[in-house]
Length: 520
Image 1 (cartoon, one colour):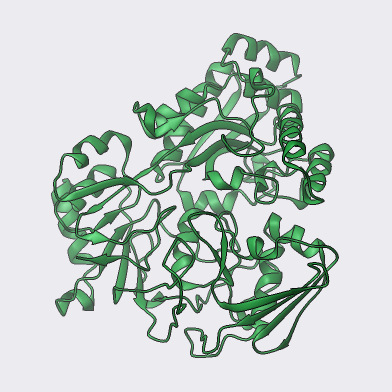
Image 2 (image 1 turned 90 degrees about the vertical axis):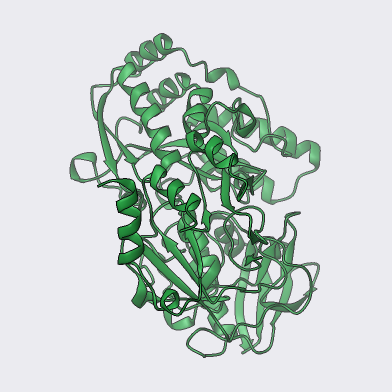
């Protein structure tokens, strides 16, 4: 099928009542297909972006990374920081017209904290979490804790508020009814799997009455009656749809098409997240061969971050950086310690693999073909592993299946996995409170399940409170330990441009948010 035919068929097959009435919705091309709708069951950014439309949070991080009250009207702090009393804003309602109550918040936070590393730390520091009445939530803490920062975090698993009836305490049981209290309602009946997801403005939403819209903080004003997401895996087709005016906004254009898009006077190409995406290769520590730390260190030694970043972000070096360790460059815990572990020396890596005792076990690399940046990094990884002589099973699948597979601890022969390329928001690599992938909690931790008592002990030290100099030294110690245990292999930081029509204004920084966006 030719591209123009595909575009015409797409428009015809996905015609909506809003289009028939002559009311143009905001039409958006997401980074990948939205296959998983529950933001607590998986940490995929496409699911997080969807959830930011549908749900709301008690606090919201602004562009200076300060947690501002959002659903919360205010709070009091007593007993040397050990007693927090939060009061909900009056009039908050879910999409089913039920009021948001304190017990909804408690149930939602317990579900979130069972999955999120910051949430786990919060619950470990909590003696009691209760809802004395419909508008009050009370935390009795063992010690002072940055509660607002935890409840307003923007990366990884976000503390979204659901109705109590949907907030199963087991995060492994996905929520199937998408009912929140955010500025948009999810129209499940209009979903076309693999092609379209639709949202409508929630007329009952009460924006915060004060402040300025700033990332997750301030008033969340929905200017569009409808927002439609169209999944277009082929980059050339997506670019053609944007240029033809059939789409308004393409979240992640591929590097090869950026020069073409930048030439268009009617389009804007810009980087929303100037902190960048922190990318890495995550091995499965629960299965051979990556359950062997010597094998992990051998593969780590062969990695060239520049190769990964060129594949993901192109040859424009202003859009990526290499020489990246285990913490966000420029952050308080960033270090150059032990960076010599990543030499890019293939011959040395082959010798190290042989010395590790590798016995030819199959290595299943799962590669999401419909996610351009991750597909490119997966191809670099596959080529590297072939050159290293491992028994590679390169499994090309879609991103939705990848998100489901990575939670499996089954052996490779039973549908398990060995490694996957991914990335997270750079801010998530700032310090131990948000750096879930640097955990060493074993079977009870994040997928990949690295087991490092030393890293866990250092993380606990950070939570007890450290001076800036102690924090810098701790960052160096944690990095040296990480290069020994290899919870993952850093592959660099890249800055992903987005592209939209100039008439589309009000885009927030960090990532794709849909409140505040309007058409001029």
